Length: 286
Image (cartoon, rainbow, N blue to C red; front, side, top):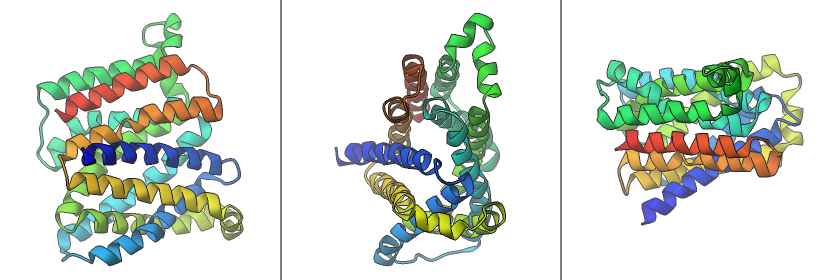
């Protein structure tokens, strides 16, 4: 049962991180928030790395880190931009599409192919994403999907979900050739380095903005670091798919936080859509 608690905590801290991210966007741009998320995650992960030690590394680790870090630097900015310009309850559920895209990318990268349960999961995820904007259905049966593509936030999050379907495979390669904790530490560290020039170029006087919002930005990184630590600990106690499926319940929490904290509307349809998408993720986990 400990893995179950850790899995739920992973989802909770993931959702709380999103809340802090959106709050920070009220006073900072997406470049400050994206860089701070990576940088402060590294800070809070450092003691754990010092405790567990540095594993033996090889060329495969370096290649996975270079590719995964580069793509994740892009997704970090797009993710933060998505929750900046659109509701949490509309954008966050779309991360559940990552397993759907992985059914296309995994066979190409790591040679893993979908089965019957994967196909059921695909249908549920598509149905859930349809329900996120079901109010648009009066304008035509395809209107809910068109509405998602018209909104800037969902468009950014769809790109994120697709890119994560690629990086998830490199995460697997990176972890297999190092350790879960050291891989996360290295990944966030690489992202921080790659995002720094973008931050300096895009944001005037970024250090002043970071210092001004230091407690909130650090808290965001802290919750992200605690979340991934809970995830890594859960992975040592049960199957990866079970942990990831539980982690995706953060989608439901994100919808609720969006409603109660940011007063977002259409809670019923978005909660139902998000729940069906999470159910689809569980079927893929089978």
